Image (cartoon, rainbow, N blue to C red; front, side, top):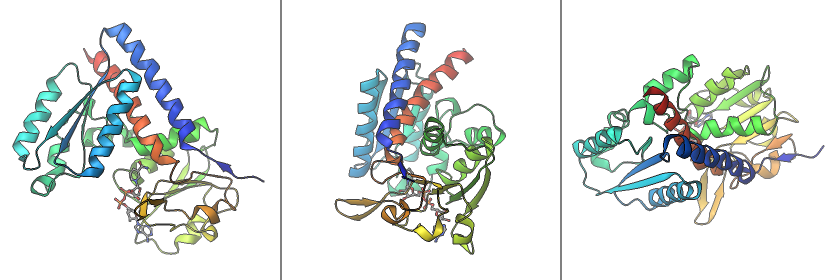
Amino acid sequence: MTTRILEGKEFARQFKEDAGKKAAEWKEKYGMAPGLAVIIVGENPASQVYVRNKHKSCEELGIHSEVIAMPEETTKEELIARIDALNEDKKIHGILVQLPLPKQIAAHEAEILNRIAPVKDVDGFHPVNVGRLVTGEEGLVPCTPAGCIRMLELAGIPMDGKKAVVIGRSNIVGKPMFHLLLARNATVTVCHSHTQNLAEITRDADILVAAIGKPKFVTADMVKPGATVIDVGINRIAPKKLVGDVDFEQVKEVAGAITPVPGGVGLLTVAMLMQNVVKAMEMQMQMR
Ligand code: NAD
């Protein structure tokens, strides 16, 4: 049996194509393109790269994009005032605050992010959107886990009735992944740093999701033959070398399907963000 390599590039292209079509449709229907505003505070080089990528994707797809660069010494009040103005701005349908925030405001991260109107919260971090995900109502879902699920759907990998194991319980990846898999009728187990006999649990999984942040943590002996393995991890082990949370070379010999790092889940996140922006616009237009 040959292992299927789930290439992020192909899925990201499809997500973007769908988002671009919707953006054109909304422009025709509402006389205005969907709009994304990204606030970046300070000069973190990695954040600048991420923000540039988001801006570029918007431009490619006909989505209006504003990058709001605020100085390192911005206060919580100044940042909140900027968010309030964007919440009222009719051209803007999605708002992102690029993390991490500088240290003088980092402690207020939750208060700052929660100021974004839930309907414009394209990161899906607001408690209102988290609540909607848990109760199964329509809302905005964090981009990385939403991208993984959409990839599984497009790849035709069944989730209904399957055993899924998620390693990691962060608010950004692990927990939303749990709810998304549950909503698709998988039987889901979430493992974390206090889990005992981890390998025994992961070996039972038809779908194994690794979101840990530890290089090559998942080894072949932890994977059931034929399982689908989704590697969310991005770990820089040398200046130009990224690896996932899964030991790809080993695990690809056992898995039925696997995402590589780089070139896997990492490419889905920005593409999914584009889908969230067009979705946010539709939600806002229906509220008017
Ligand atoms: P996090 O640090 O918030 O959470 C890590 C989780 O791993 C925790 O819940 C912890 O309990 C669990 N964990 C740690 N050690 C463990 C162990 N020994 N056994 C079992 N569980 C253990 O991280 P995060 O934000 O969820 O990110 C996870 C990884 O995914 C990171 O590498 C991050 O860079 C990457 N990531 C990628 C994308 C993307 O676009 N592809 C997006 C977000 C995060």
